[in-house]
Length: 180
Ligand SMILES: Cc1cc2nc3c(=O)[nH]c(=O)nc-3n(C[C@H](O)[C@H](O)[C@H](O)COP(=O)(O)O)c2cc1C
View 1 (cartoon, helix red, strand yellow):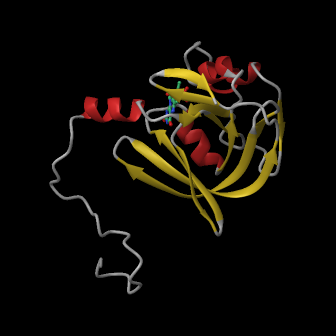
View 2: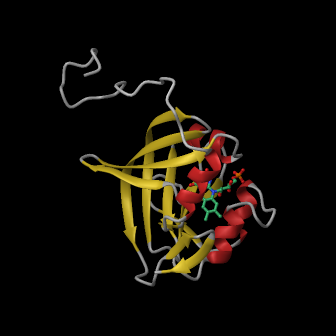
């Protein structure tokens, strides 16, 4: 029990910072590299501008209300843009969109809106760019941003879903792309 919230299932600050013993950062990174994950391009558009970035740190939170989260490094150029817009779209990549993943990860030097020179784009409800070749697109409105260490954990409630191609997914595992 955290002593503040009377509900027995709420643990919002039960694990507040304490001098915990932690594993070596490189060991943790190696552990994470062994976990396969779907590759997504998170896009945003609005008064703050248009941009996107590649992310594997995406997770379903609850279906009531339909909510997912994205973990975004606070150093990225996309952070202030996404927060200012208050909307984002999670575009889950098909196996043949490896190049698009690299562009949105900044590996080709393209910046901010320039990244959209690759791919074909449309939109759903929020105006965030939706990739035509995605497997699925979840269009979200930001509900909460929580800072955890180097990253922002961005929670979004899903406003619209587009079920698109049923081609195999692009997966990142062992520091390389695979298809599933
Ligand atoms: C396969 C792959 C997965 C990635 N996953 C994440 C992620 O989950 N969160 C994150 O902040 N950066 C992730 N990155 C790195 C970002 O894509 C990259 O730092 C970002 O595009 C830089 O954004 P900026 O151009 O807005 O600065 C990933 C990169 C790759 C290639």
